[in-house]
Amino acid sequence: MNLLSELLVADLTSVAAAWDPDVKDNYRTAFLADPVKSVGYMFRGIGALTVGELASQRIAVAIETADQEDEHSCFSDNTNADLRNNALGVQWVYLGTYPGTSGPGLDTLVQEADADLNEKLTLQIEASVKLTQAYPTTFDQMIVLDPEPLELTVKALEVQGELIARAASSLGLNVELGV
Image 1 (tube, helix red, strand yellow):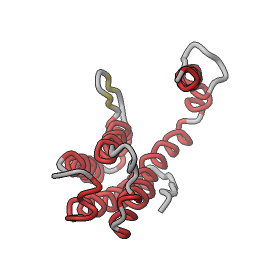
Image 2 (cartoon, rainbow, N blue to C red; image 1 turned 180 degrees about the vertical axis):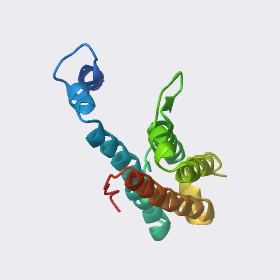
Image 3 (cartoon, rainbow, N blue to C red; image 1 turned 90 degrees about the vertical axis):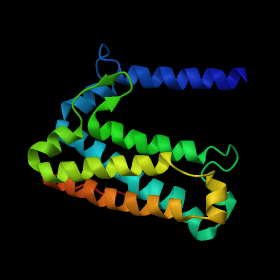
Image 4 (cartoon, one colour; image 1 turned 60 degrees about the vertical axis):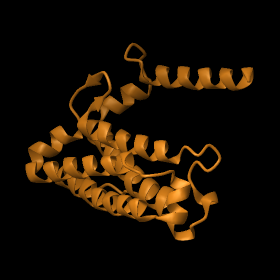
């Protein structure tokens, strides 16, 4: 257990140093040096998580096989929380919010480029989050007994992915979402 704790502390220390504003020549410095590239990375990140990971790998595969072993967190039975938190993470990046703090998000840029698209995407992200918060039972039970709530989530995430790609395009970014 001590080794695991030491590894966790080392990893977290490394991440903190990579983003420390007082450290020169770290990841934060490189990230801020090219805002267009960085915004592209942000769109690619939320898009790939939305479509390639959440909709496809983490939900659709399990629905298709109806095999509880294909549940993302089958050993901890924590998939509901994983999906909800991933959906929230996308929302936080897009809106520039995080519990206890906020700032400009990607929505600020999209609002300037295409206000209607920004509204659609903001509402779609909110809908996806709500779907992941409203599951009637655990993921493993849904894939076996009634996958409809998960199927609705996949459809919402696919629409969300298309809107993310359109939002990136509205800013002149060509972003591959990992589909």
